[in-house]
Image (cartoon, rainbow, N blue to C red; front, top):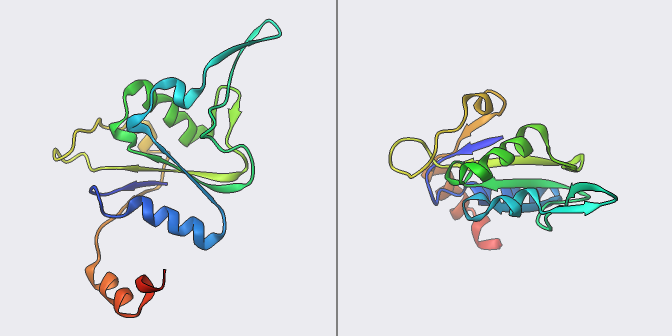
Length: 150
C-alpha cells in the first residue's frame, strides 16, 4: 500500500490508528533521515562469509504494519533497498515476518515538494491510495465525541 497526500494530512496517523484498531504492532522508518546502513544493516564477517546485521528498527516477530515514511524524499541509496523491502518483503538475509505488512507514504510529485519520482515498476506493484482531507467527516466525528475520548 502506498499512501500519497500532502504534508500534515494524517497519513501516518491513519496507519497508526489502523494498527491500534487491529491490535497489531506499528513501526515507522523515516527514510528521509536514514543512511543505507540504517536500513540494510552493517556487514559482519561470520564463519568466513559476509552477512548483514539486521537493524534494530526492523521487526523480527509478531504482526503489524511497517510504515516507510518519506519514500520519495529518501536518497536513492536508501530508496532502492526500501523498494525491495516494500515489494519483495526482504533485504539481504532479512525477511519481513509473515504477520507484518509494509506500507509507504509519499508526498505528491506535483512540484510543491522536493521529491524524487518513484520508479514506474514500483508504482505498478503497489496499491496507491490518495489521502485527502474530508472536513465533513472530521466535523461529524468530532461532534460525536470520537476525537475527545482519546
